[in-house]
Amino acid sequence: MKFKFLHNNINVLDLERSLEFYRTALDLQEIRRKETEDFTLVFLGDGQSTHQLELTWLRGRQDPYNLGDNEIHLAFEAQDFDAAYELHKKMGCICYENPKMGIYFIQDPDGYWIEIIPPKR
Image (cartoon, rainbow, N blue to C red):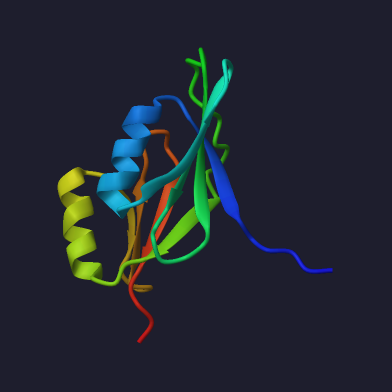
């Protein structure tokens, strides 16, 4: 039996704010959207891989999500790591740096961490 990895989901409090963050910080674009009276799903893609990020916005939710110890994260390879670092520094979203490993993390508006990795050499 084979399985194909399709997407990861995160829940967001302010859909427009999250969409703007993911467009600006990671150049993710909306692929498709599903709206119901209770929630909206927006699938984002990078235009390179088939993997997608699904943002779920629950209508009426106002309490922040409990992210626990926030040990779960997404990871992105930045083709121009230095330019990405400067963009994220300017945006003020870098939340952790690990110079020994040559990586850093950014944080989205809901507190999710995203690892930024340079291209493999």
